[in-house]
Length: 330
Image (cartoon, rainbow, N blue to C red):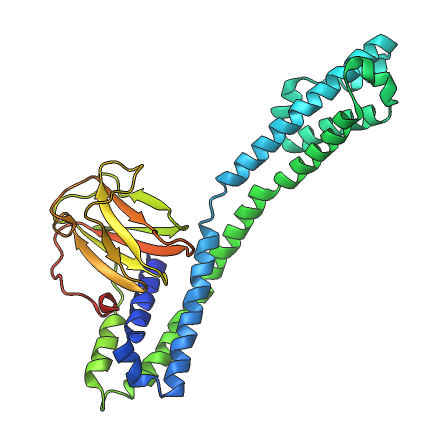
C-alpha cells in the first residue's frame, strides 16, 4: 500500500468512526440517503482492508511447508532408492542402476520439478518389482506407498508460495480502483451531509474536519498490524524518543492494548493503555506511558476469539495539540 493510499484509508476510517458515534448517528440516521451513503463507504473500506490483508500475507510459511515436504519425501526416496541400487547390483541390472543412481543432492538441491521427477522415477521402478524381491533389501510395500503419499504432498506444497505471491500481486492491482470508488462515494456522502448544515452546523463542521487527509510526510512512520487472539507485536524498535507521538487507530470491533517495553518477547503488565474498538488514540512518549521510557512499542490483542486490525503512526517531535479527534471519542 502506498503512502497516499494509507493516508486516504486513515481519513476514511476517521470519518466513519465519527459518523458512528451514537450522538452523531442520531442526527442523520432517519435519512435513508445518508445512511445508505455511509454504508456504501463502509463496504468499500471493508473491500480495501481485505485486499490489503491479502497483499500483506506472509509467504514464508509456504516456503517452510515446501521445504519440509522436500525433506520428508527425500528421506523416504533415499531409502527406497538405496534398496533399488542394492537390488540392481545383486541382479547385475546395469540399466536399472544407471537410471536410479541418485544422491541426496538429487532429491533436495535441484529444481523442484526435477526433485519430483527423480522421486517419481524411484517410486515407479520400485512399484514395478515384486515386493518379495525387494524385502531382502529392506524395502517393504509400506515404503512404496508412503513415498507416493509424500510425492503428492510435495506436489501440493510446491505451488503454494507462488499462489500466495500471485494473490498478493492481484490484491495490489485491485487497490487503485477501490480507492477511486472510495473517493467517488465519499464525494456523494459529502453532498448529502452538506444538506444538514443549516440545521446542524456543528455536525457538518466536525464531519468536514474528519474528512481532512493527514499527510504522514517524512517525519512520520506507520505500521499496519493484523493480530490473532492473544497475539502481540513489538514495533518501532529504538526509532522514537521522548516527546514523539504514537497515533493508534483500532479498526477492530474489540479493544487492543498498547505499552512500552524493553523486553520485546513479552507483553508488559504495567502501564498498559487500552484503545477502544473503532477508535483512535494519541499517546505521547513517554508521558502517556506513566513517564517510563522504553525502547519498543508493544501492541496486544487481548481478546479470546476476535482478530484485531490496528494502524500505528509514529510522529517525531511533540504534537501541537493533545485534543482528541472526533474518532477518539468513539
